[in-house]
Length: 225
Length: 86
Image 1 (cartoon, rainbow over the protein chains, first blue to last red):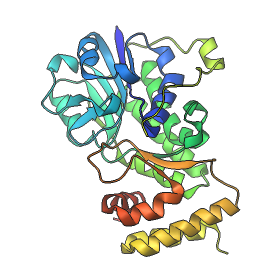
Image 2 (image 1 turned 135 degrees about the vertical axis):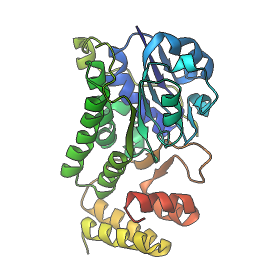
Image 3 (image 1 turned 45 degrees about the vertical axis):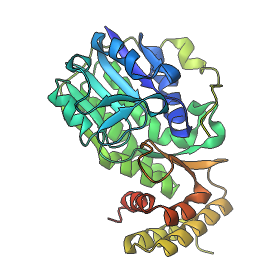
């Protein structure tokens, strides 16, 4: 069974979030990785029906989740049911938990995890070429990675969701930077899980050793100004 | 000089009152205190994944937050929600 990983990369927040998914999640997934310029509607339409999980990071609002340069990938009422039916969907994006998430569930998605307000974090802009090395961003994004890894280990959507929430709580408890802490608490409060909490996918192999030890090379694609 | 935790409290109180000027000033002083304490990355930036439909940018360097909260009502509202200042 294929997986779809949508990771736009054209500005600081998409660079940061997609960097963590590339580093920690992509090596565990078979095709299809729709990264950067491939993160568009047509490749998604072709890949999604064959997958059991859709993981995406990109800009979003209440009605839509977007890919590279904010090209619309999924919009309320404007996609084919086959693209989402029976799938576990996780979108790291802003506000997609308000209308898009419920619409995906109505159209047959097994479960959906997203956020009901903006997804916010503090990153170090000087680490844009190696976003996975950004410790400030890691406080927010590693709980997402931990939740996704739990899903890929075969845990249920509820278990995976709880792991992400616990990650925010744990990091907030030890965080000394008040702004970073407020971001963690904000993301935790706005995380939503819809659909079947017992939904799960076939477990994927654990991260092979070379990926655990060797980070990917720096990303050299220029960011939009 | 007050430490960053005290200044953060002052910033949150200003957010709750909806006082943009005071919140911006308190945030500026909070950043200065944090810098004096030697904390933060080399270019810390507050980022979000909302679309261009919003009237605030997706990436705001921390030192520009005070100006941005005065310029953008939506950004100020976001900061209020983040500070539980609803």
